[in-house]
Structures are given as structure tokens and as C-alpha cells.
Image (cartoon, rainbow, N blue to C red; front, top):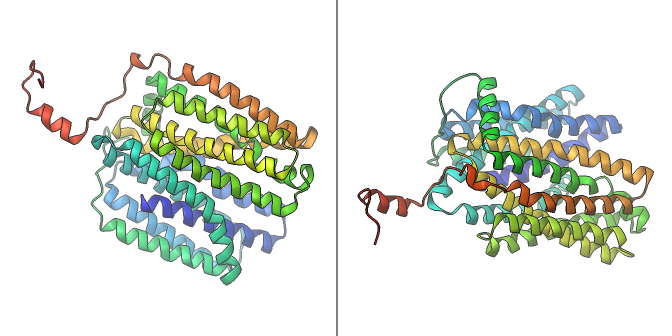
Length: 406
């Protein structure tokens, strides 16, 4: 859990520092766009292949090695701060994005493998959601402070040291072994993973529903700056408040999810999607920044609950031997699908208005909520692999077949 959260935190700090470095040295929006393309979009396409290769190895070796590689990559990037060359920086950012995404997926798979047999998956997800939301909110803030105090070089060196420390601690930790179905090439294993996904109709519908949801939920990303500065005339400070309050709402949503974690997944996902729709709707009609911030809090809370509940629902239906690869596929989807939402939001804000864009997002959330019952329909047709708590499994192992506990 700590390695997962620190990976997210360090990645946020490194992304902010490197994006500032690229823009400062190139003075071009194209250069910045190239950086984000290499650090976020392309890794989503490449990371599943790396996970397909590594999830057959021992996690006790694979995870520490990945973090050592990240430490080395950030060390080289730190060297390039004073010896700047755009192409090497972009290639290293691409490599780090792929490694970070793979480490994230393998860490999640290891955590699920530890928790699910003990029937603690919901509780672990609640803790992880809170920690991830905190890292999501604090990462850019910490990155800004470190860069302002010590420059880009300091931020990259801090990341280098942090990943090295994480690698050492993971090397000293007894991690679960990977469960796979044998060898084969990377492409073969990716094909088998997709076949596994298609074989469970509920899991496939959950993935499709979430892809649609992410396209809708991210319409607001390119709209918020226009909305804050021109629609509400709140300036840069208002834009920063809007982003910060959304992140605070996500933390609140993680707290809300904790006591509700055992409730029906369709109810949690549908209710959270409705909260997102209400949040976007409030922002669409908000007459002032204060009202818009209320909408952002509601939307951020719904965002956190929806993601956590959906993640648990998919993990419960995924066999352990496919957990790392399926996690990588879902993470890649979470990185690729927002591209559609960002394009739609940008077009709506440019040719209509930011309020229209938020209204479209609110309407899309209503459609998302309507999809939830359909996604879970006929779940009994193909039940997922169940994993009983260790204590229950031990008791049942001692019961002769045909006799009851009573």
C-alpha cells in the first residue's frame, strides 16, 4: 500500500517538475503537449505488455527492480536538467511512465492477493482510496513547493531517493508469488487476458460502462480553467480553489465510502454517478464561485466513491492469476478514455460555453447511472471465483463432505 501511494505521490511531483522544465526550455505548448503525450498517453498503450511479461515473475523480485529502474531514470533526468536535450527527456519520461504504470498494477495485484482470501478487500480498498485521494490532492502542491524552494533538480533528486528507499523496503518484504496459467509470449498472454475478460459478460460490461463514464467525468478537465476565469470571473485563484476543492471532495468521498463499503455495488456506483451528475449540474448553473465550489465538492466525493466501488466490483470477479494484467488494462483504460472527454469538453467550451459543457457532463452522468443495472444484469450466469476467508476455509476443510457445520 505504501509503495502504491508513494508511487502516485512521486509521479505527481515528477510530472509537475518535468512539465515545467520542458516548457521553460522549449517555450512551446507543442513541447508541453509532447511531454504529456509521452508521460501519460503512450504509457497506457505500452504498460499492459510489460505487466504481461512481469506478472509471471516473482513479485519479490519484479517490484523492487521496477522501483530501482524508476530511481535510475529520475537520476538521469536530474542530470539532464543542466544538460537539456528534448528528445532524451521525452524518451525517459515515456520509459518512466511505462514503469510507473506497471509498478502500480503489480502493487495493486499483490494487495488484492493478500486481502481477498481474508475477506478484507472492501476495507483495503477504502484505505487505498483515502490514501490515493490524499496523494492526488497533495502531489501537485508538494511538487510546487519543492520546485519553488529547490528547483526542478531538487524535485527529481527527491524522487530518485524516494524510489530507491521503496525498492529496498520491498526487497525486504515477503510478497506473494504471482499465479499465472503458464508461459507464452507477451502477445499471447495479452490475448488470453482479453479472452478472460470477454468470457465474463458482467466484467466486460463493467469495463465498458466505466470507459463511458470516464469519457463523461473528464469533460470538465479542459473546461474548468475557462469556467473559473471567464464564466465566473474568479481568476487564477478561483481556478486553483476549484481544483483544490474537487480534490478535497475526493478525500471526503473516500471517508464516506469506508462505512458503506459492504453495501450493494450497483447501489454505490449508481449513487456516486448521480452525485457526479448533481455536482456537474450545480456547476452548470452556478451564479457564483461559492455555489460552483459546492458543486465541485459533491462531484469530487461522487468521483471517489464511484471509482472505489467499481474497482472492488471488478476485482471480485477477476481470478487471481489474471489480477495484475486486468488491473493494468483497467489502469490503461483510465488513462486513455479521458482523452475523449477532454476533446469533447474542449470543443463544447470553444463553440458553445463552459456551462453547456458541464450540462452535457451532467446529462452523461444520468445515462451512466441508467447503465449500472444493465452492467450487473445476470451476474448469476457466471459467478466469479470466490475466495473464502482463511479461517472459514480452514474450518470447511475439516468438515467431511455431506455434513453441515450444524
